Structures are given as C-alpha cells and as structure tokens.
Amino acid sequence: ASRTWARSRSTMYTRLEAFSCRDCICSDEADRPIVYANIAALMKQTHGLAPDLSEAAALDAFDDMVKLELAKALSKSLGTYSLRYCHTLMISVPAFMPFCLDEIAGFAHGMSTKYFANSVFLWVTLCFAITPAVLASIDSIARRFLHLKGWREQLWLLLSYALMCVTAGGFIVPLTMLGRWGRGSDSKSAVFASTCLVLCGLTALLFLTP
Image 1 (cartoon, rainbow, N blue to C red):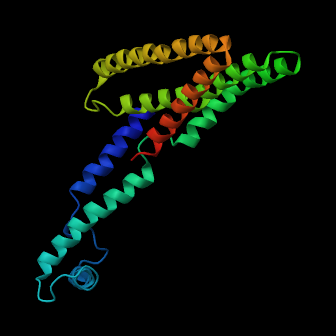
Image 2 (cartoon, rainbow, N blue to C red):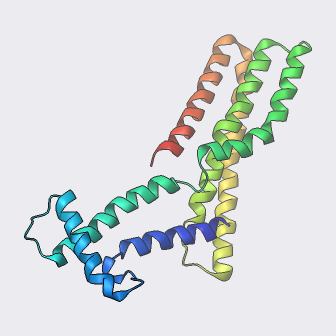
Image 3 (tube, rainbow, N blue to C red):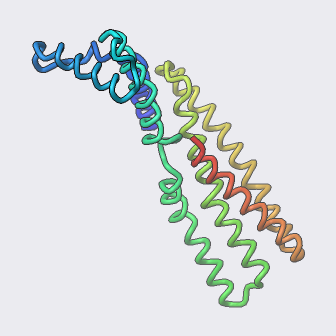
C-alpha cells in the first residue's frame, strides 16, 4: 500500500511539473480563446504583468505560477509522510497503552515512584518517538527506487526493512538499558527522563518539518 501511494504521489508531482493550460481539455473547443483571454487578463490584473504583454507570455506566466504555487499547496496538503504524526499515535498509543496501565496498577500496589516514573517515560517514548520514527522510516523506504519491479523490488524492501528493524532495536535496547540505569538515583532518573523528552520532541519536529 505504501509503494502504491508513493507511486501515485510521484505521478501527481510529475504531471504538475509538466502542466500547461494549453493541454487542458475544453468541453467546447470554441470556448478556448475566451478561456485563454480570461487567464491572460487575470494574470495581468492580479500578478502585475505588463498590460501590453502578449497572451502567450501571460499563459506561460500562468503555467509557471500553477507549477510553483500548486506544488506548495499539494506538498502542504499531503504532508512529508503518508501518515501524519497524529495518525502514528493512533497506531502506537493503543499498542502500548496496556503496558502503561499495567505500570499504573503496579504503582497503586506499592511500586516505587522512581521505578514507576522510569517505566512510564519508557512507554511514552515508545509511543511518541520510537514507533512514529519507525513508521516514518517505512514510508521513506517505500518512496525510494520506485522504478524497481518484481523480485528486485521485493529484495530492496526486504533488505531495507531488515535494516530498519535492526536500527529500531538499536534505539529500543539502549533506551531500555538507560531506563534501568536511571533507577539508580534521582539524578540518573532525571537524565533518563530528559533523554525521553528530547527524543519525543525531535520526533514531533521530524513530522512538522516540511
């Protein structure tokens, strides 16, 4: 599904780059000169073109404007990734919320405050940082080498996702070890909490940056 959407998205931008109002279809070809004249008049009035500019030049300016402005609007509408940050949270929060609830129940039955806080910070980071970052990586991989087909495409995806899993483990394992280390003292716990907050902030910034 990610590859299909990536190809559709790529096609949108490719068609937009080649846009020309001269290639547009008129339901009645007799209206084409009128439409062209209206476009030229609109460009001269709203974009400060010279009043004596030729119609052809005004149409070219319109094409350039559409390619520039519509590309920006399309990019803003579609976002950097197929899933927005809030959508990734809809996936991650239900997956990890039971663990958080389990920690809360443990705290209610005598779990130490330090242990409880570190555990909650770990699960929150998995929800708000690690899982969204992994999903963003999957989306980025899906958009690479769209010309590949058949077994070559399957091999590329297999190798890429295997590398991504290793990379994700490279974040999760040290984070878990850091959480255990943070149970040693209040200062260590503060370092762990700060690390978790930084990771969550960087991940949110990753999705917000165009």
